[in-house]
Length: 148
Image (cartoon, rainbow, N blue to C red; front, side, top):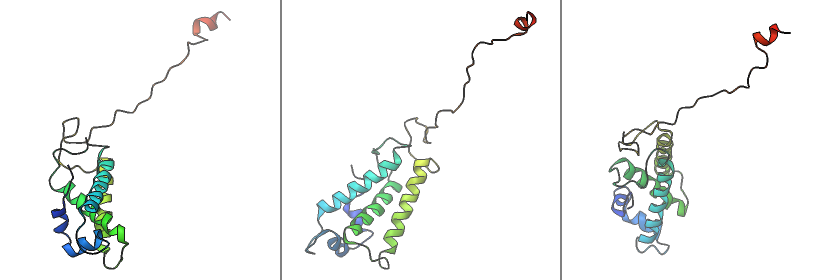
């Protein structure tokens, strides 16, 4: 199941923009290109989220994951055509914010409010780090030194 759908994208940009981004002839929205951009966005989300969560999400957390998928999908679609940095600065900013959030998610500094494989809703803690020492048997002891 995809984290966002065409209707989610239409809430952010017009049909004309989606046509321009997906159809070289400028006639219609090409669903196959939309689906490919969504799949790429979802794979990027899963790549970051898998460090803390079981992915793909099922059910999908309704708000934040959908928003991230929309932002990354739109960035992917605009990337097909190249960016006019003045006109599409908002798309670039939203993508950069999404990636920043995903990096924090991967580190465990933010959560998305779903349970993890540990069932706690918080990232599974890393195993404790420690040290152990092992030494050889003592060669010299007080008793052995007395006889010398």
